[in-house]
Structure formats: structure tokens, C-alpha cells
Image 1 (cartoon, rainbow, N blue to C red):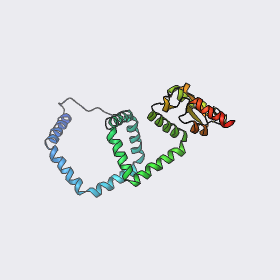
Image 2 (image 1 turned 90 degrees about the horizontal axis):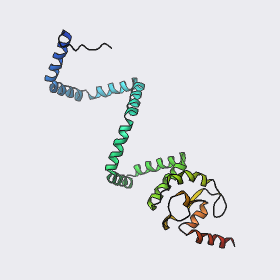
Image 3 (image 1 turned 135 degrees about the vertical axis):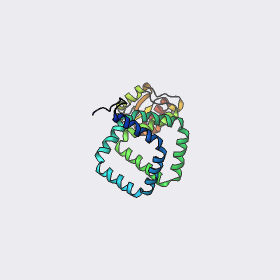
Length: 210
């Protein structure tokens, strides 16, 4: 593309400078005129924009995706900063809407159900981390790494298939989320042990077996 002349002496530069000054002098008048025209031709504008979107759908989609990719990190940072600064208000508003808007509540439940069906293990892991945070014992990174292997081990209490991970020292009794406080357990043993001390629960298992 040929660069614009910037000499300020030739006729083209003088014409451009004249047009710029004239526009600035009449800017507010032109803006008001444009607003009046848009208000009087709203239906025509809607039809024009709709036709333009239909005829240039691929171009617009590509431009939107390019803008999204280009500004993603900036928008994510802004969203996180806003949420951090307004977390309590946002949570209160969400709870209020969830409690008073049946349609919104149903949409949230449908989304959660689809997420559980599509990715059950990540959903279970998120629930587990949430419960661990409430109890003050989130799993450490090493424990998270070990957990998939424990799930394939037999139950440490009855020898059957495990499928769950138990805190050896119960969280309610001060147990931590470190890897050395975890063991494989089946659902039945995990639920039966609950917050009992390890030795007390093992005595119960031995007594039942006898």
C-alpha cells in the first residue's frame, strides 16, 4: 500500500488538512445528525446489519476468534481481578438467584449433570478437594500424584477392590492430606471407618471376622 504524503505542502496534504479542520469544527453537529438519522432508520439498520452478518459470517467469526486469542490473557486477568475484588457480592448474588429463579436453578443443575456424565472423575476430584478444604486438609501435590495408583490397589482393610482413598489418621482428628496419610479403601470400609482411629477400626474388623 502506498504511504500517505506527509509533506504538508502539496495540494493533497493541504486538502487533507482542510478536511480535518472542517470535520473538527463541525464534529458535534455531524454526530448529532448521524444520531437523528439512526433513530429514524432503525429498522433499515437492523436489516442491513443482519444481511451483513449473514453474508460475512466466516470473516466475522475469524475476526472474533483472532480478537479472542489476542486478548485472552488480558480478559482472564481482568475477570480474575474483578472476581477477587467482588467475590462475596458475586457469591451472594448467585445464591440469591439460585434460590429465587427456578429456571436458572434448573439450568445450573442440567449443566452439572452433563459435566458429571462427560467427566465423572474430574467432578469427583473437584468435590473431594472442596470437602478437604472445608475440613482443612487439602491433598498435597504428591498425594494427588499418588491417588490414582491407590485407587487401583486392594482395600487395605478387607482386601477387596478399593475404588476410594481413605485418610489413615482421620481429618476430623487432625489428619493431614500428605501422601503418607493415605491408603486404599473400598466404599464400605471407608464409610465404616469414617472418623474412627485406625487401631479402633481394625479391632472392629477383626472382631467382625471372628
